[in-house]
Image 1 (cartoon, rainbow, N blue to C red):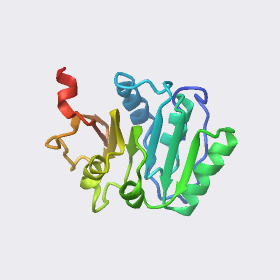
Image 2: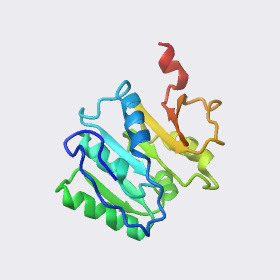
Image 3: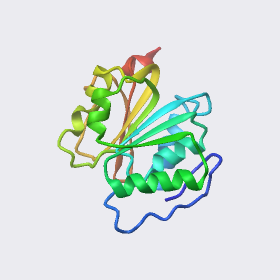
Image 4: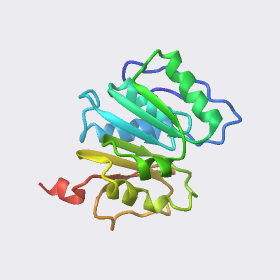
Length: 186
């Protein structure tokens, strides 16, 4: 796992081979963050939520790029421990790992975020309702963005909050905002 940009740029962390997580590829991560740079300045006291954090690849990227606070939610004990280890290694207090279920977190959370990244298993039964839960519970600030990583079989274009879809190899990202497509038509 490699950090693409920011203060930890080019740092590498060896993910144990026993992990079941499918980390976002460096290629896809670099490209989606290039797109996101047009929407959001990560160095501007941004709060972020990384759901289904897995190896913490996105969390460390967000911290590296200057996010003020990143909450990483991961259910798998070994993955959670790995995220904690990575954050200790870089000596940051900007990331708060939470060991727990992402659905329980977004259903009970009351904090709003500037940026939410969700990378659930592509075959997750309720993957399609993640954006609906986030918007129903008002977890995104008015100018905030939600990025959902998913497989090619998912299509969110009819969601009222949908902004755009980006595809990098087998990795698909759908981007959402409170205003949806209206935001790009202003």
